[in-house]
Image 1 (cartoon, rainbow, N blue to C red):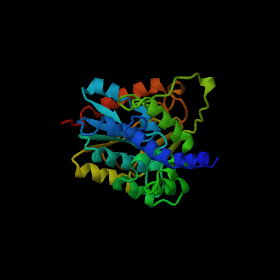
Image 2 (cartoon, rainbow, N blue to C red):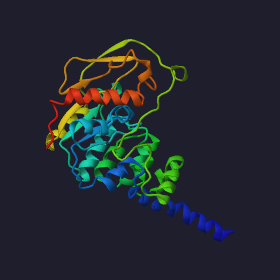
Image 3 (tube, rainbow, N blue to C red):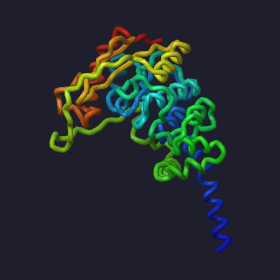
Image 4 (tube, rainbow, N blue to C red):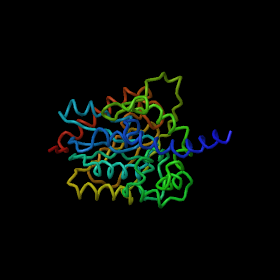
Length: 293
């Protein structure tokens, strides 16, 4: 029994070490995919954002119209701070691009660096990288503290997020090309459902905002310092219309489909049909604004 217990302890200690190594060299999570597939690569543009950016903009549709090669770097469950991290991650991997489309949500406006993204476990492979670890150090919530402590031993974050990371580890161990809900260009879409199968809450609410916030300014500064053209995009909402008093280069589609139930998956996400039409509309809106090298 004592040998079994000793073996169990060794496995508990070593599995997270191997797991993080496997994930870092996999394609499963998008940060890993950037490292394994876009390191030292030249592309035309990236899309940053949350699940709304992920499911609204189809880079393959944009590329078919612009004649470009783009990558959707948006992550579901990610706030604008996650967008800052992803932008720095792309640049740290020497991924070259001349334009960045920032998909902005209502909750992103005015935000600083005080609220971590909900799916922060996806960054565990890079917690020893200074440009990532600095963000987790400033948070006091348990998930962030354990991810940050994973610099010492990856088991802190690995076992705390075992329901997510253990399956990801096993999938990647079996197939290092496996991806978690995104295609080769980083895109993902929600299915079309009947109106009876979904709950949509029509508010007809108009929200007035200023385009500001430390996180937004950080993205803006990074883009300026790296000669990257930044464009801000607001994806369609079913229940809200956003009005900005002033803005930089901004395409506001918050009310684009407000009267079309069939194009939404839920209140804040379009479905695959809505994604196609929104991508077409954005391609047309930016055709004279985007400059690619």
